[in-house]
Image (cartoon, one colour):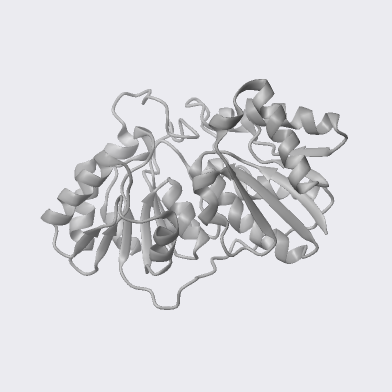
Length: 321
């Protein structure tokens, strides 16, 4: 049994994207085992994937150079890996790579395509093209080790009985999120024909969504009420998920639920469309040459008017559903 030690510590959506890749890679390579090292609270993302051992850590326990050296020693002692897969490629994981390389282990890391993405998000670049999907970038790490892997890009529904619509109106950055009044109106229209379940997290989001539940009949806020395992189970039972370009889209992919995704400053061209999700289910303002201006949605609008979100027509989401 070949053992691969893989690590990716954040962001939540990016870690979630590794799971369907692991599943298909391990099905095609049954004599391989992956040790996935990530934050403790991400464990449910990998539940039920054969040959994945999840090792949850608290990064605060391994601060600085010496902390990372201790982590690398602990992981080698516990798991004796044959290969190292750096699926993150940030300073912390580069340091871990060096420790493993010194011990004679072969280290393979993700090519994030930084230069391509910088060119894609240059507002003066009018020739925007689809870049390699992030899930393929993850798969490339295993291919570089000499393994064969072909990603199906097909959803695998975990539940046969599906009903209701999920709606996750929040995202980490303003550039990825519809104005709340548009999201409220979208929820109100969707709830006329379907039960709408709200997803969110944190005190402020939970308060907002509970207010919406009180104002819009046929809606239910699940924000702050579910564990990650319970949330995945609920998303699996939905007919469709409506999400920003956010982690909820990737959670829907993980449990085989179709997602209608809303994109503002970001764009599927950067490679972050959910695994198995259809490009026809992407909704965005198409005639803005400045899009995408950001890979993560964390930049201020260079025009100053957030046209990609303010001019967004919610009717287009309703038509998809």
